[in-house]
Length: 132
Figure 1 (tube, rainbow, N blue to C red):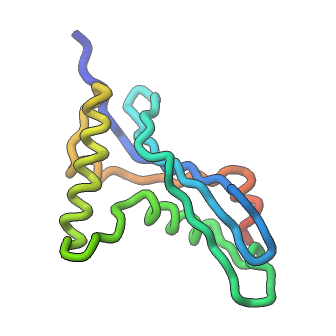
Figure 2: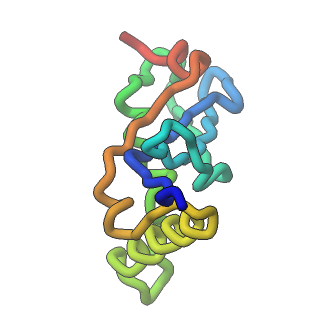
Figure 3: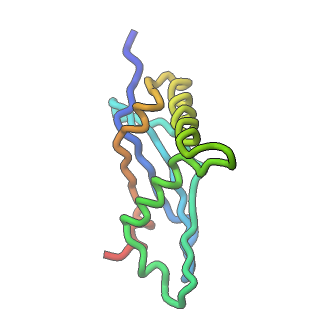
C-alpha cells in the first residue's frame, strides 16, 4: 500500500471577476499543493470587492502585495460570530480544511495546515491591474 499524499503548501489563485473605474471584484480559490505536485481544492467560493470613493481610477492604486494580503484574509478564518473567540473560529476553520483533505485520502491535520507556506498567485488579468 502506498503512503497517503501529504500537503506541502497552500496556494490561493486570484482572478478578476469584474472591473469598473471605481471598483474591482476578485475571486479566490484555495488549494492544497501535494508533495507529488497534485492539487486538492479546499475553497472556491471566496472573493471580495475593492471600491474607491475618490474620483481617481482605483486600478491605478492597486499593488500586488495588497491583493495578496486580501486574498490570504479572504480564504483564512472568517470573523467569529458573536460569542465565539477568534481562536475558536480559526480552530474550526483549520479543522474543516483538514477534514476535507482527510476525506479525500490526503494526510492532514489542522495545526500542520496552519503552519504551511501560503502562496498567492495572481492571474494575468489580476496582475495587469496592479501598479509597479
